[in-house]
Length: 266
Length: 266
Image (cartoon, rainbow over all chains, first blue to last red):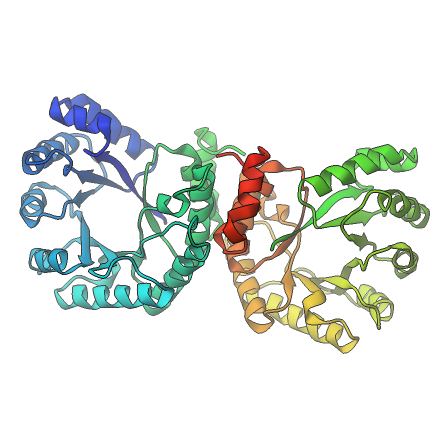
């Protein structure tokens, strides 16, 4: 089944930042409840936007969210100290967002992740920048899987983000990432593929239809998770429908449930 | 570029049958004009529904349609005599709809198609019924391509219809046809894949979102044509968007044209 990582609890979003600054717990609780009711399988928590306040904001957010969360959390920070504190606070095994091949982040994250039992998002980014070809993405994913396996993270706990790039400046970027996903899944059937999708439509109009059509294409290639806004009903309807079409919804149960709830419309 | 075969001129549609019976040329001309304006690359013409009138209805339809058609026609009949008459009437090289492996249709169509220069839709149907697995579909497509090649039809003029089957009774039917399309395109990169799609959603509610999500999945697998209603703006928007995402729309030109025309909305 496709796993949606709900992206809304992020202090770079104006309303979330205001709620965090004011310690408005009800706002956060309502948002998390809505994300869960809409089908989020993980709640991403990012407290990075208020400079100098990340650790205390993350602590308050986790206390607040855990009063209502029924799904595991995605701890989203580049700072191992913040992650260590957060890891000790969560009740359920979390997902860590993220490691990459950028030397500074890699060197900080490997000691933190060593010996821990958790899921981890692995970005195909290195110090040279974004990947330039399908083979480049596959090679970076391969390195990340091997490095994470070496410190005890099982392949089935790795969520590779192949880094979606805009087609507005280069129309081959869609095929590039689709081919990369197929290649990674061929080499590592147990690995998960996740990431944000909205970069694909950067610079183009009517971005939402591009984003939700692209997720259907990516799911056909093997993507089985995404970092999105679960309150976007149209993208969620596309995911539920595509997941059914790909044989992952026995007796079409999730689809029919969505139709009855009014969440899926022609 | 994806090729849409417009399915509307079919006497099994009530309004078309009425227009044909009344020899209402304006109705037919308007319909064909709308299909072309909406992006149809072929206009399918089927005059089979008024029993005993197919030949004269087809003749009148072709005369009428050719006064306005700027795209080639798809001659849709199981009767070689009707097809011979129609083939002689059309100004542009047509597409023939269709041959299959059912003995009666196969034996009737092979002499008709021999030595002709035309495109042809090849249905993966035989006298045992619908295909039962991906391998079965690929095997039938392989036989059809070889038989058509043997009578002089180039592979690039063959449009294989893998026969989409409903997922409501068996949720594996979507993956079955997707894998078959990949297999056929791997074996014959020049062959086209076409067909109707609406069978996929038979027996389920909210069928249109299922059909248009499925076409995005099928396009990722290699489908490059479909027999649909070009006036269904949502499925056409999905096709234009997916075609762009698959790298078939240089500078995103078709997509941007569609947005400017108001045909693509988020």
